Length: 236
Image (cartoon, rainbow, N blue to C red):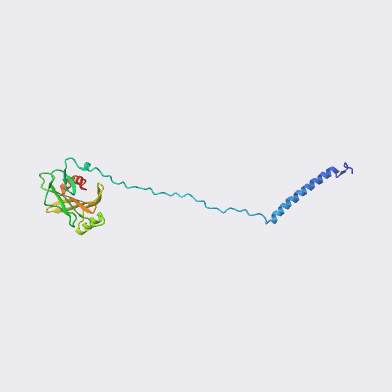
């Protein structure tokens, strides 16, 4: 065969190369077609699986309750409670201090002796705001067993039973000892008087410490009464 002979303007060699390229292109088309058909036979396009959204836990702020502590009252040294120059009144059961000038007495002139029941009067002091004053100031100490579960309930029962309504009532602590402070108002003859009563619990015993004075003298001496009650203590 004459290789240099031309057909359609190309030599036999060129025609062979062109035929080879055409065959290669045809092969490529067959491969691509086969791949496409294979996917179609497999059920078309595979669905894209989208992961279901999951709720991510969020941090919740939890406030831890703050512990609070009630401070315990600290006992003050007893000696520091006694004003300079005051006089001591002491028995086998208790002691209390008052300004000088008070004398023990046998008669009692108060609005309320304890809070009813059967209190035992153990001390009566009588004094005055000045030597020339016609009015007397009385200080009494008495006691009786408690007949209720709590001191507050005891005082309430006593007041109700006697039909008394104090002008002031408050729960206090006398150097860590629980107590109730009461103020009564009334008249003795033609004199207006006030009475400051402290009800103090010691174990199963209730103590009454009372300060009674004409109303003007009462407020003039109220500071001394408040200082005096701080010196009251049961002798152990």
